[in-house]
Every structure is written in structure tokens, then in C-alpha cells.
Amino acid sequence: MATFALLACGVADAPERYALAELFGSARRELIDHIPHCRRLGMEVVEVGPQTATVRLPYRDELVGDPVRRVVFGGVITTLIDHASGLAVFCSLAELKAIATLDLRIDYLRAAEPGRDLVGQAHCYKLTTHVAFVRATAWEHGPENPFASALGTFMIGANQSVSPVARAVRKRLGEGK
Amino acid sequence: MRGRQALALIPYAGFLGVRIEDDAQGIVCVLPFRDDLVGNVALPALHGGVVGAFLELTALVQAIELADSERVPKPINFSVDYLRSAGPRDTRGRAEIVKHGRRIANVRVLAWQDDPSRPVAAGIGNFLL
Image 1 (spheres, helix red, strand yellow):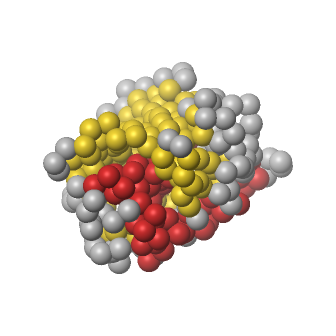
Image 2 (cartoon, chains in turn brown, yellow):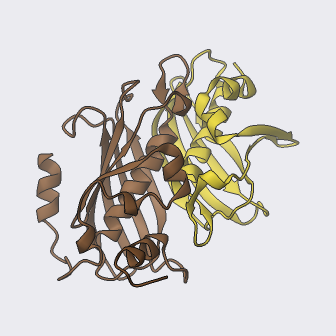
């Protein structure tokens, strides 16, 4: 927790206003419910704030990667962290644009405990015109004992399409589309 | 334990619907497209996490194929480069063991959709055997 609090204070290039400022808070379903794969996994947004996002992925037997140890497959943690990281990037932007993951590197520090929901938290610690840099961790008990740690970069303005998050937000703010 | 047997034992592989095809060069893993794997409905494109997970699964199957172990190797780390968005089509992946040590396997993997020379993602990772 302390690490992320420190990181959150340390952004020199934060915009004056965030495009998603009105959505900052907890349990923001509208940020995730329009995404088919997130719905399928039952992922929930725990909280979003300036440059940060925390996402929960409920434990399910069908996500197990090691049949003996009953540990969730590493790639599922990739999905959780990729998604939390993408949201953290959206939460850093002054203007919503489509983003795309450029690369993501995950260290599996230990096995996640079977039967426990997984929580991923990401922080966008640097934003440039075209690229966003993110750090993320994931845990099942608490942030002080993560089972995974990750670094990611995202392309901003990745394609011409309107991002699904932007559409969902516009709809919510009554701007049509 | 061989890759095919391992795939049948891994619940998440069943969840994704991944199957194995063989060709002259070895194992190819196939991820059939499904609507609930989509992460961006506007494009549409597979969720980046699904692409990453598929790469890791392909790498793991290759590591199991060569490790001759009864245990599923544990991933130590995995790195994914996203090269193109993965459209609403089947995705294929092929892995190559870069180094097969006594305890660690380093595995490289490439995923593509229609054309193997236009990969959608590349991955590399270390597994504890």
C-alpha cells in the first residue's frame, strides 16, 4: 500500500484535469461491463483514481493452470494486470483516446493461493505524447505481499477507432453515441 | 507427460478452448475465436490478456513436451510484445525452446492469425522445471 501511495504522489506531469475524473471512485461497473471477456471472467473495478486502477478477478476452478496445486494459470494474472494497467492509463489521460498494450512483462513472485479472489493494482507513473508507462502488482491477501509484479507500456491514440471506454463514458455523461 | 495430455489436464486451457495441431515443424497451438474472448468491441479484438495467456500456454505446452516431467513447470516470468491487434479469427502459436537447462527452460513463442509472417504477438519466458 505504502509503495503505491508514494508512487501516486510522484507524478510530475499530471494533467490539470482527467478525462475520467467524474468516474473516479469505487465499484465502477461502467468501466468494465461493456467488455465481453471481463464479463466472462466476472472482473470488477474495485477502485479508480488519478493514474491508478484496482481490479478484482474472482477465483474460479476453470481458471486453474496447475491441476495439482490448483493455482490459477499465470496468463489469467496477465489478463488481470493488463486490464488494470489499461485502466490506469485511461485514468491518466486528459482526453480519452484509444490505447493498446505495447508490451507487458510479468514476474510471478510466488503461487497465488487457491480459492482466493485475485486483485491487481496498476499505476501509470509516466505519460508521454504517444506512450504510457505502467507498474502493477497483484495479490490475494493484501498489497504488502504480492504474488506478481509487472511492467507495461501502452500506445496512446493506438488506432482510429473510438475506444469502448470512451463510448461507455460518453453514454454515461449523456453525450450520445 | 506430453503436451497434449498436459493440455487436457489444465482447466484454463479448456476454458480458452485451446487445441494442438501438429505440422512438420512440431506443435502448433490453436486458440479458436469466441465472442467472450473479446477485449475491444470497437475493433473488434481479442483481449490483450487472452493473447498473453495463449502465448504463455503455448510456451508451457512446449516446455512440458520436452521436460519429460510429471509436474507442470512453474512460470518465473513472462514477457509479451503486442505487435498487431488480434482480430475476430482463430489464433495460432508456436513455441521454441531457447535453452533447456536442468532447472530452467527459456521459451520463445510467436502467435499469428492468417499469415505466420505477420505475427500478432511475441512472447518469451522462463519456466522452473
